[in-house]
Image (tube, rainbow, N blue to C red; front, side, top):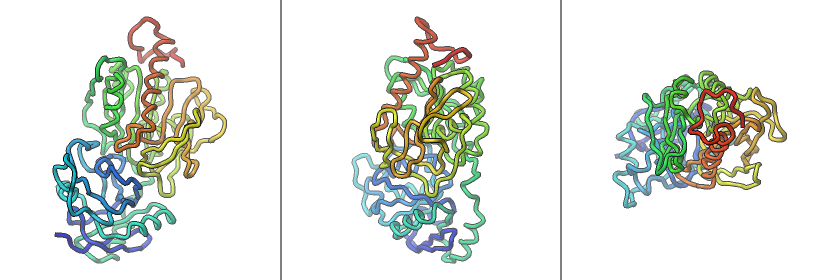
Length: 388
């Protein structure tokens, strides 16, 4: 049975509605997601750690919740905001309602909110901290709690979401390559997409060292998506520098793109309200093709869109840009085997326009092996003279 609930933004604006999910109180950064489908994948994306997600699609929960579409071991959002929760679940795979899942995992939410007005407010004034309460209607008291909550800027969260132990996703069919994937908040579909291409994926903790990576004898290294401020990820930047020093082929997405930018000597910055949803237009500058992408990030890399820029590993360039605001969406080195993008090519849930990036990673590993290890097995990860 729902009961009255309030949502308070840190600038003092108040929205009133009804409880949705668990009864309680929560705080986090208010962000909005424009996806019309894939709410289960959104909820279980570790990149949403400590964020209160506002769904712009008005009707949420239609297909219930199933066991197949989980992207990680739990729901990570700090809170959930919807306008019109589905009264009935309707899907042959559904095993429970979304409301039941939120309650079961203790996720506090609010429904009946004018999410259009809330989204417009966030677009105009930027993402900000907020609180939701279904145990008190004292908006002034909640505002004080919100203002005392930590900001996403300066947040170091990867250790809260990473795997505790290394695990392996075996290649589907014949094994062609081995990849060491650093879990900064990885989504489950990502190693599956690599496995479909004959890659055996060893998923390592965010605390992994270069020795841990070399022990896998990888043909390539992957850095995943994840939550928090890339300016706080010095450990991951140092690890990637060691990978790049060894010329091991590298592919990064989302947080892995921001880490790559920092490893190349670039800065990062917080976006006004970020990019979240499965309908973000991006142009691949290497082909001119425009793709619709799945994104979830509040930070971006500061790099020149035109021409090249100097890095410790030779010239680099921006390979992809967001067409809504010209934000950097991809980077690559021209004389070393490394590239990254600021979005989710694994596309859970959809679209699949960017799936070719996994093939590009395969080509990078293949070319590196052909150039430096003709007629031999997997490339040694400690071959310092490797170039691309």
